[in-house]
View 1 (cartoon, helix red, strand yellow):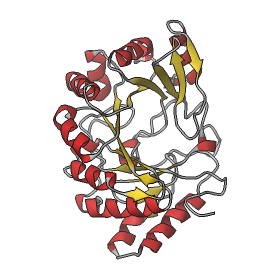
View 2 (tube, rainbow, N blue to C red; view 1 turned 120 degrees about the horizontal axis):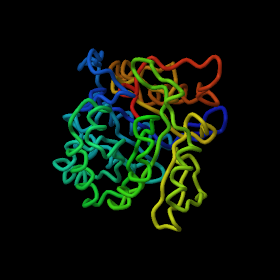
View 3 (cartoon, rainbow, N blue to C red; view 1 turned 60 degrees about the horizontal axis):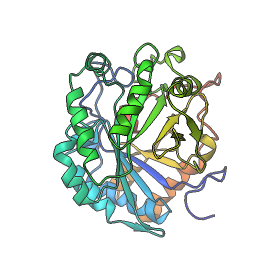
Length: 331
Protein backbone atom coordinates (compact mmCIF):
# COMPACT_ATOMS: atom_id res chain seq x y z
CA UNK A 1 0.00 0.00 0.00
CA UNK A 2 1.40 3.41 -0.94
CA UNK A 3 1.55 6.39 1.41
CA UNK A 4 2.20 6.53 5.13
CA UNK A 5 0.35 3.43 6.33
CA UNK A 6 1.42 1.58 9.47
CA UNK A 7 1.18 -2.09 10.36
CA UNK A 8 -2.31 -1.60 11.79
CA UNK A 9 -3.71 -0.04 8.64
CA UNK A 10 -3.72 3.54 9.95
CA UNK A 11 -3.22 6.07 7.15
CA UNK A 12 -1.26 9.13 8.27
CA UNK A 13 -2.57 12.42 6.91
CA UNK A 14 -1.67 14.88 9.69
CA UNK A 15 1.81 16.25 10.44
CA UNK A 16 2.42 18.30 13.60
CA UNK A 17 5.50 20.55 13.33
CA UNK A 18 7.08 22.22 16.35
CA UNK A 19 8.76 25.48 15.32
CA UNK A 20 10.44 26.10 18.66
CA UNK A 21 10.67 24.62 22.15
CA UNK A 22 10.59 28.09 23.72
CA UNK A 23 7.41 29.57 25.21
CA UNK A 24 6.21 32.85 26.66
CA UNK A 25 4.50 30.97 29.52
CA UNK A 26 5.73 28.41 32.05
CA UNK A 27 2.67 26.22 32.62
CA UNK A 28 3.21 23.95 35.61
CA UNK A 29 2.02 20.83 33.76
CA UNK A 30 4.52 21.42 30.96
CA UNK A 31 7.68 23.24 32.06
CA UNK A 32 9.60 24.11 35.22
CA UNK A 33 9.94 27.77 36.21
CA UNK A 34 13.67 27.84 35.43
CA UNK A 35 16.47 25.69 34.09
CA UNK A 36 14.86 24.45 30.87
CA UNK A 37 17.47 22.87 28.54
CA UNK A 38 16.66 24.69 25.28
CA UNK A 39 17.36 23.24 21.85
CA UNK A 40 20.50 24.89 20.39
CA UNK A 41 19.62 27.50 17.77
CA UNK A 42 21.75 25.81 15.11
CA UNK A 43 19.74 22.60 15.55
CA UNK A 44 16.37 24.22 14.80
CA UNK A 45 15.06 23.47 11.32
CA UNK A 46 15.11 26.32 8.82
CA UNK A 47 12.11 27.36 6.70
CA UNK A 48 13.77 25.68 3.70
CA UNK A 49 14.12 22.40 5.63
CA UNK A 50 10.55 22.52 6.93
CA UNK A 51 9.20 23.19 3.45
CA UNK A 52 11.22 20.29 2.06
CA UNK A 53 9.83 17.88 4.64
CA UNK A 54 6.24 19.00 4.03
CA UNK A 55 6.58 18.70 0.25
CA UNK A 56 7.69 15.09 0.64
CA UNK A 57 4.99 14.43 3.24
CA UNK A 58 2.34 15.93 0.95
CA UNK A 59 3.40 13.59 -1.83
CA UNK A 60 2.91 10.75 0.69
CA UNK A 61 -0.68 11.80 1.40
CA UNK A 62 -0.35 14.25 4.30
CA UNK A 63 -3.19 16.77 3.99
CA UNK A 64 -2.94 18.87 7.16
CA UNK A 65 0.01 20.51 8.86
CA UNK A 66 -0.36 21.95 12.36
CA UNK A 67 2.30 24.37 13.59
CA UNK A 68 3.03 24.14 17.30
CA UNK A 69 5.76 24.89 19.83
CA UNK A 70 6.60 25.67 22.55
CA UNK A 71 4.90 28.79 21.30
CA UNK A 72 4.93 29.19 17.51
CA UNK A 73 4.37 32.96 17.66
CA UNK A 74 7.91 33.20 19.06
CA UNK A 75 9.35 31.85 15.81
CA UNK A 76 10.89 34.69 13.77
CA UNK A 77 10.00 32.84 10.55
CA UNK A 78 6.37 32.03 11.32
CA UNK A 79 4.66 34.06 8.58
CA UNK A 80 7.16 32.91 5.96
CA UNK A 81 6.68 29.27 6.96
CA UNK A 82 2.89 29.54 6.83
CA UNK A 83 3.04 31.14 3.39
CA UNK A 84 5.36 28.47 2.02
CA UNK A 85 3.42 25.53 3.44
CA UNK A 86 0.01 26.88 2.41
CA UNK A 87 1.22 26.93 -1.21
CA UNK A 88 2.09 23.23 -1.25
CA UNK A 89 -0.22 20.84 -3.06
CA UNK A 90 -0.44 17.09 -2.68
CA UNK A 91 -2.44 14.43 -4.55
CA UNK A 92 -5.62 15.54 -2.75
CA UNK A 93 -5.13 19.27 -3.17
CA UNK A 94 -3.65 22.16 -1.23
CA UNK A 95 -2.19 21.54 2.22
CA UNK A 96 -4.28 22.93 5.10
CA UNK A 97 -2.15 24.83 7.61
CA UNK A 98 -3.38 25.16 11.19
CA UNK A 99 -1.71 26.42 14.36
CA UNK A 100 -1.90 25.88 18.12
CA UNK A 101 -0.90 28.90 20.24
CA UNK A 102 -1.26 30.42 23.68
CA UNK A 103 -2.72 33.51 22.01
CA UNK A 104 -0.17 36.01 23.30
CA UNK A 105 0.80 38.38 20.44
CA UNK A 106 -2.02 37.11 18.23
CA UNK A 107 -3.49 40.61 17.63
CA UNK A 108 -0.32 41.72 15.86
CA UNK A 109 0.04 38.46 13.91
CA UNK A 110 -3.53 37.75 12.78
CA UNK A 111 -3.49 39.91 9.61
CA UNK A 112 -0.22 38.40 8.41
CA UNK A 113 -1.33 34.86 9.20
CA UNK A 114 -4.59 35.31 7.30
CA UNK A 115 -2.77 36.78 4.30
CA UNK A 116 -0.17 33.98 4.36
CA UNK A 117 -2.84 31.29 4.16
CA UNK A 118 -3.37 29.97 7.70
CA UNK A 119 -6.69 28.10 7.83
CA UNK A 120 -7.55 27.71 11.51
CA UNK A 121 -6.45 28.23 15.09
CA UNK A 122 -6.44 26.42 18.42
CA UNK A 123 -5.80 28.67 21.43
CA UNK A 124 -4.93 27.37 24.89
CA UNK A 125 -6.73 28.86 27.89
CA UNK A 126 -6.95 26.81 31.08
CA UNK A 127 -8.62 29.38 33.33
CA UNK A 128 -10.48 32.68 33.20
CA UNK A 129 -9.33 33.69 36.69
CA UNK A 130 -6.32 36.08 36.71
CA UNK A 131 -4.91 34.74 39.98
CA UNK A 132 -5.21 31.14 38.84
CA UNK A 133 -3.70 32.02 35.50
CA UNK A 134 -0.70 33.55 37.24
CA UNK A 135 -0.31 30.50 39.48
CA UNK A 136 -0.69 28.04 36.62
CA UNK A 137 1.47 29.78 34.00
CA UNK A 138 3.86 31.72 36.27
CA UNK A 139 3.14 34.77 34.11
CA UNK A 140 0.64 37.64 34.43
CA UNK A 141 -0.56 37.43 30.83
CA UNK A 142 -4.26 36.49 30.96
CA UNK A 143 -5.27 39.88 29.54
CA UNK A 144 -3.01 39.23 26.54
CA UNK A 145 -4.48 35.77 25.95
CA UNK A 146 -8.01 37.18 26.10
CA UNK A 147 -7.04 39.88 23.59
CA UNK A 148 -5.64 37.17 21.34
CA UNK A 149 -8.88 35.19 21.51
CA UNK A 150 -10.90 38.29 20.68
CA UNK A 151 -8.70 39.03 17.68
CA UNK A 152 -9.19 35.43 16.52
CA UNK A 153 -12.96 35.80 16.91
CA UNK A 154 -12.89 38.82 14.59
CA UNK A 155 -10.72 37.00 12.03
CA UNK A 156 -11.60 34.69 9.15
CA UNK A 157 -9.82 31.73 10.77
CA UNK A 158 -12.40 28.99 11.33
CA UNK A 159 -13.14 26.76 13.08
CA UNK A 160 -11.79 28.49 16.16
CA UNK A 161 -11.05 26.09 19.02
CA UNK A 162 -10.09 26.77 22.64
CA UNK A 163 -8.15 24.14 24.61
CA UNK A 164 -8.03 23.64 28.38
CA UNK A 165 -6.17 21.01 30.38
CA UNK A 166 -8.43 20.08 33.31
CA UNK A 167 -6.61 19.54 36.62
CA UNK A 168 -8.00 18.52 39.97
CA UNK A 169 -7.97 21.25 42.58
CA UNK A 170 -6.99 23.87 40.02
CA UNK A 171 -9.62 24.50 37.35
CA UNK A 172 -12.14 21.65 37.25
CA UNK A 173 -14.77 24.03 38.65
CA UNK A 174 -14.47 26.26 35.55
CA UNK A 175 -15.54 23.85 32.82
CA UNK A 176 -19.01 25.37 32.47
CA UNK A 177 -17.64 28.92 32.56
CA UNK A 178 -15.12 28.04 29.86
CA UNK A 179 -17.81 26.60 27.60
CA UNK A 180 -19.93 29.73 28.01
CA UNK A 181 -16.87 31.87 27.28
CA UNK A 182 -16.15 29.86 24.13
CA UNK A 183 -19.72 30.25 22.89
CA UNK A 184 -19.49 34.01 23.43
CA UNK A 185 -16.40 34.02 21.24
CA UNK A 186 -17.86 31.79 18.49
CA UNK A 187 -15.48 28.98 19.39
CA UNK A 188 -15.53 25.31 20.29
CA UNK A 189 -14.28 24.52 23.80
CA UNK A 190 -12.16 21.36 24.13
CA UNK A 191 -11.14 19.83 27.44
CA UNK A 192 -7.97 17.74 27.65
CA UNK A 193 -7.11 15.15 30.25
CA UNK A 194 -3.87 15.94 32.05
CA UNK A 195 -1.21 13.75 30.40
CA UNK A 196 2.28 12.60 31.50
CA UNK A 197 4.24 15.04 29.32
CA UNK A 198 5.94 17.44 31.76
CA UNK A 199 9.70 17.92 31.67
CA UNK A 200 10.06 17.15 35.37
CA UNK A 201 8.16 13.83 35.11
CA UNK A 202 6.01 14.75 38.12
CA UNK A 203 2.67 13.69 36.56
CA UNK A 204 0.27 12.19 39.07
CA UNK A 205 -2.79 10.36 37.76
CA UNK A 206 -4.68 11.55 40.84
CA UNK A 207 -4.39 15.15 39.59
CA UNK A 208 -6.12 14.23 36.34
CA UNK A 209 -9.84 14.90 35.94
CA UNK A 210 -11.09 12.06 33.72
CA UNK A 211 -13.50 12.28 30.83
CA UNK A 212 -16.48 11.00 32.80
CA UNK A 213 -16.11 13.70 35.48
CA UNK A 214 -15.76 16.43 32.85
CA UNK A 215 -18.91 15.28 31.08
CA UNK A 216 -20.79 14.94 34.37
CA UNK A 217 -19.95 18.53 35.29
CA UNK A 218 -21.01 19.82 31.89
CA UNK A 219 -24.24 17.81 31.98
CA UNK A 220 -25.34 19.67 35.11
CA UNK A 221 -25.67 22.80 32.96
CA UNK A 222 -26.03 21.64 29.34
CA UNK A 223 -27.79 18.94 27.39
CA UNK A 224 -25.06 17.00 25.61
CA UNK A 225 -25.48 14.69 22.61
CA UNK A 226 -22.55 12.76 21.12
CA UNK A 227 -21.80 13.55 17.49
CA UNK A 228 -20.78 10.90 14.93
CA UNK A 229 -17.98 11.10 12.39
CA UNK A 230 -14.98 11.45 14.68
CA UNK A 231 -12.62 9.43 12.44
CA UNK A 232 -9.02 10.27 13.42
CA UNK A 233 -9.81 13.48 15.32
CA UNK A 234 -8.49 13.58 18.90
CA UNK A 235 -11.62 15.21 20.34
CA UNK A 236 -14.87 13.39 21.03
CA UNK A 237 -17.55 15.97 20.19
CA UNK A 238 -20.91 16.68 21.80
CA UNK A 239 -23.60 19.12 20.72
CA UNK A 240 -24.60 21.69 23.36
CA UNK A 241 -28.34 22.10 23.96
CA UNK A 242 -29.09 20.87 20.46
CA UNK A 243 -26.48 23.04 18.73
CA UNK A 244 -25.10 24.81 16.86
CA UNK A 245 -22.20 24.93 19.32
CA UNK A 246 -20.21 21.88 20.36
CA UNK A 247 -17.79 20.88 23.09
CA UNK A 248 -14.96 18.40 22.78
CA UNK A 249 -13.19 16.07 25.21
CA UNK A 250 -9.71 14.72 24.47
CA UNK A 251 -9.43 11.72 26.77
CA UNK A 252 -5.97 10.45 25.86
CA UNK A 253 -5.57 8.65 29.20
CA UNK A 254 -8.95 7.14 30.06
CA UNK A 255 -10.40 6.68 26.56
CA UNK A 256 -7.45 6.58 24.15
CA UNK A 257 -8.14 6.95 20.45
CA UNK A 258 -4.90 5.32 19.26
CA UNK A 259 -6.73 2.91 16.95
CA UNK A 260 -7.61 5.81 14.64
CA UNK A 261 -4.51 7.97 15.07
CA UNK A 262 -3.33 9.54 11.80
CA UNK A 263 -0.61 11.86 13.14
CA UNK A 264 3.15 12.20 12.89
CA UNK A 265 5.20 14.79 14.76
CA UNK A 266 8.33 16.69 13.76
CA UNK A 267 10.26 18.36 16.57
CA UNK A 268 11.88 21.76 16.19
CA UNK A 269 15.28 20.07 15.92
CA UNK A 270 14.16 17.79 13.12
CA UNK A 271 13.34 14.52 14.87
CA UNK A 272 10.39 12.53 13.58
CA UNK A 273 8.07 10.96 16.17
CA UNK A 274 5.24 8.55 15.40
CA UNK A 275 3.43 9.11 18.72
CA UNK A 276 3.12 11.88 21.27
CA UNK A 277 4.38 9.39 23.86
CA UNK A 278 7.07 7.75 21.71
CA UNK A 279 10.48 7.21 23.26
CA UNK A 280 12.10 6.69 19.87
CA UNK A 281 12.78 9.32 17.20
CA UNK A 282 14.18 9.18 13.67
CA UNK A 283 16.63 11.90 12.63
CA UNK A 284 15.42 13.92 9.64
CA UNK A 285 17.66 16.92 10.34
CA UNK A 286 20.88 15.06 9.65
CA UNK A 287 19.45 13.60 6.45
CA UNK A 288 18.32 17.04 5.29
CA UNK A 289 21.72 18.59 6.00
CA UNK A 290 23.54 15.73 4.28
CA UNK A 291 21.65 16.40 1.04
CA UNK A 292 19.42 13.34 1.24
CA UNK A 293 17.17 12.79 -1.76
CA UNK A 294 13.39 13.07 -1.53
CA UNK A 295 13.36 9.29 -1.63
CA UNK A 296 15.68 9.20 1.37
CA UNK A 297 13.41 11.58 3.32
CA UNK A 298 10.39 9.49 2.35
CA UNK A 299 12.12 6.32 3.51
CA UNK A 300 12.66 7.83 6.97
CA UNK A 301 9.00 8.84 7.17
CA UNK A 302 7.86 5.38 6.15
CA UNK A 303 10.24 3.75 8.64
CA UNK A 304 8.82 5.91 11.44
CA UNK A 305 5.25 5.00 10.52
CA UNK A 306 6.13 1.30 10.17
CA UNK A 307 7.51 1.27 13.73
CA UNK A 308 4.39 2.81 15.26
CA UNK A 309 2.90 0.80 18.11
CA UNK A 310 -0.77 -0.06 18.47
CA UNK A 311 -1.16 2.41 21.35
CA UNK A 312 0.67 4.70 23.75
CA UNK A 313 0.49 2.28 26.66
CA UNK A 314 -0.39 4.73 29.46
CA UNK A 315 -1.51 2.63 32.41
CA UNK A 316 0.48 -0.44 31.37
CA UNK A 317 3.18 -1.66 33.80
CA UNK A 318 5.86 -1.09 31.15
CA UNK A 319 4.81 2.50 30.27
CA UNK A 320 7.67 4.98 30.52
CA UNK A 321 7.10 8.70 30.06
CA UNK A 322 9.01 10.22 27.11
CA UNK A 323 12.21 12.05 28.02
CA UNK A 324 11.18 15.21 26.19
CA UNK A 325 8.53 17.47 27.64
CA UNK A 326 5.52 18.68 25.66
CA UNK A 327 7.22 21.97 24.82
CA UNK A 328 9.97 20.11 22.92
CA UNK A 329 7.70 17.52 21.29
CA UNK A 330 5.02 19.80 19.91
CA UNK A 331 1.28 19.37 20.33
